[in-house]
Image 1: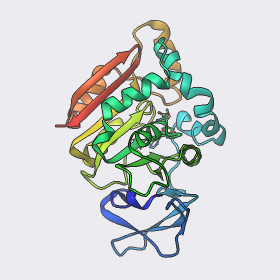
Image 2: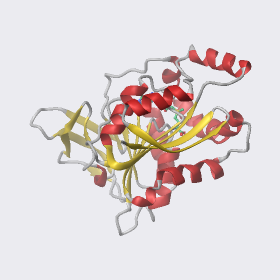
Image 3: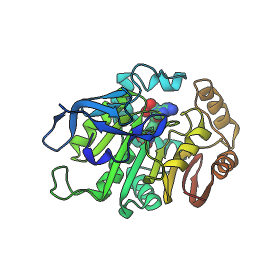
Image 4: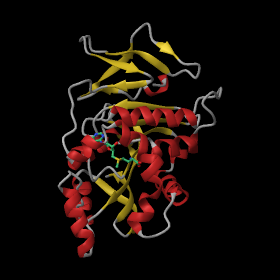
Length: 285
Ligand SMILES: C[S@@+](CC[C@H](N)C(=O)[O-])C[C@H]1O[C@@H](n2cnc3c(N)ncnc32)[C@H](O)[C@@H]1O
């Protein structure tokens, strides 16, 4: 955890309750808090550990619910996710050459992180989008001047977050990683300039609860940027999606996603579709 993230962080399920760093924390040379405790600033005894630089706001209480979510709790999945799958995923899913060289500029165009402020990568896995946003706004891990943007990656699977932090350090990027749930963002209201979610909308469970949380935490001109999959148009694709559906991965129609976002009080800014893959940017209405 980097101290500049603390201003935006709140107790999970209690967005009015700030968190304070307890005395006795251990710091890394880049200023990250490696080990310590965050305490609720409301006089209760609630406290949350920081271990190996990662804040754990879920403790032992929350278990993954679907087979897809359970898979992401396996250290092997966390190890292989970017090494084996992520870089090839969009090329396979869209049928077009769609490497990071195409995807990450698209993310940056939709998000516009040069605006500065706080950005979340929600259900971040290994933190690909968090790194892309940090690389666009930060000079170096040890730079004397504070970065223009504070980047926070959130996921409920600790193995994913450990790998994410290792990659961020490898790339010398200053990213705070937090174990929390997409449906109960531990973030102050109207505190963030951008919320990104890459590929996770299909498996987080209750999408409407996430959209409501994204709406709550975004500043009035903030942006929600989504990359997600929609229902396939042809029968083979639909059959594959039906099988994946039994593992907890959902493929709603684009119209369903639009309706849910409008109901959560977002309006569209931009959208591009490549086969079943959709990129879009939304703003609070
Ligand atoms: C498809 S992967 C994410 C890919 C990543 N965003 C990227 O662009 O590479 C899905 C991730 O969502 C996380 N996840 C699933 N449900 C979640 C929830 N309700 N809250 C937080 N994280 C969740 C999983 O642990 C997993 O790491």
